[in-house]
Image (cartoon, rainbow, N blue to C red; front, side):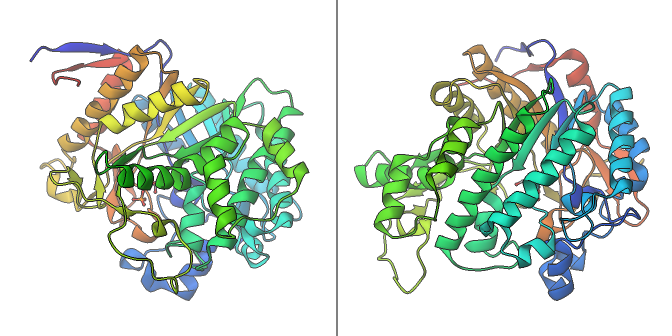
Length: 470
Ligand code: BGP
């Protein structure tokens, strides 16, 4: 095996990401109840070890120390999200909160002072509960409230932010809320989910339209979770199953948000099963003319599917799994803590898909990472987590990102999930993802071995790699 030095393009964005609800903590600025606060009030048992998002990583009080840690771990860029509930504490609408503006201004000014480019995301699963009561993403009024929030952020923070994002993983709340029960209020109704998905896409386009009016030097885009789909075999039944799964989970948001139109096969299928949402021609026009200018790619795992073995129980409401089953490939490598397969080459396939089918739009890896439970097991006598598995995970994925760049993919950076261990929704602090460990009892932050590696990686703009890239 030969060693090669993998060097990334100049000014590559090295950094990480997290979100407001997962890291800030409530603080004293005033903040509306979110769906996460509401759910915790109603069913605290749903959250791992009964931990809510009230304090999380307490970034709101510790941001100065945290920005120093960003520098210490090689960040030249970082993705935050701006909390809608903090900006509009009267339930997500009404008067803007001057204390929230002051907090984000201070945070962003300090990040700029430390030369850390700000990637600001406007929605990361954190709907104000009062707006969920009005129908959440199923409601046009909620879309209008979101666009007002977005427009306020462009006005207040436009001079400080490097790039903007309308949504993180818009598919997540649709699956979580309407199909799979991991987001409040846990409904089961595909058609309502399709309506919410459509209005999410419309909200993205309307926020982009509003953004254009500010004439900022930054770009605006979206962050999507994209798992390349692999069929069990080349049998036509498996290929068809894979194609349908891909339409539901990959093309559904990618095509309209980046290319401006909906995938024809998906539309035909939803029409056949009477699951199409309501829309107007004007909506389609807005979506077509306001597409993403930059694309974030969240990659964690591949999607493997096979043709269904069993008949559909039509009493079970319509769902994507009517058309395929998930395939458990023998010999697959697993992250058992999270239940996700690790398939490094998938990140390369994803980058090439974007290059070949989405006009090679400017893109970056906006999330990739490895959540591990009980990381104290790996602490040395000084209290540092020696997470060599995470360093290997990062290198093995980055090597494939590098290969995709050599083949012309327009990938501008890599952001790890995450910076300091943060709160993972219903999994709370079960799996730790950070470059920096968090002692929940004391809020003490300690740089892990991977944090030291990340600094070196960023300083050298690459690393020495010893494995073969097939
Ligand atoms: C992504 C989300 C993040 C983060 C990450 C890790 O889907 O954008 O918010 O949580 O996944 O997943 P989890 O926290 O579920 O382990």
